[in-house]
Image (cartoon, rainbow, N blue to C red):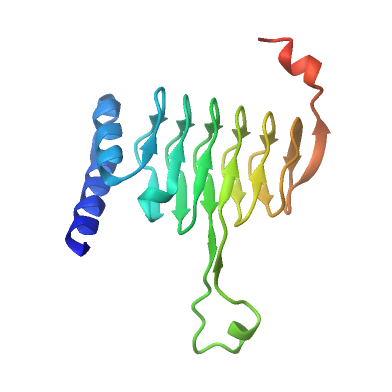
Length: 176
């Protein structure tokens, strides 16, 4: 079991080193490492995934830009037609590892899944924290720190992220 896990880690490491023009080969290595990937997914060079690769599920037509960090201690599901901009962090655990620090009484370790539904855009440098659901047809602005669920048809921004705009379904769907 440990050997298989090490082989998967090695495959994942190798996939991150495959140059840009060979994206389909990179995807093959990601799949061999245990990621669940549907058709039309693109993963840029330099994506880092820590934790269990089997916890990550990319549905159809997901686009993951360079420098994205996924902490997959728990389940991460990215919905169809979703784009994640460069240097986004998606973190499923809080594990302060403060054995010698007295603050460890207040900050207990935990993991919670993150679900990003269909047709979502997450801007550059945003951070999605454990237990969040980003509902369909929503936008997370660049640099936002998302600590709570994001409603459908909204734009959230800020630290912590709050709704700054409502997108009206009839306007969004008019472009289809």
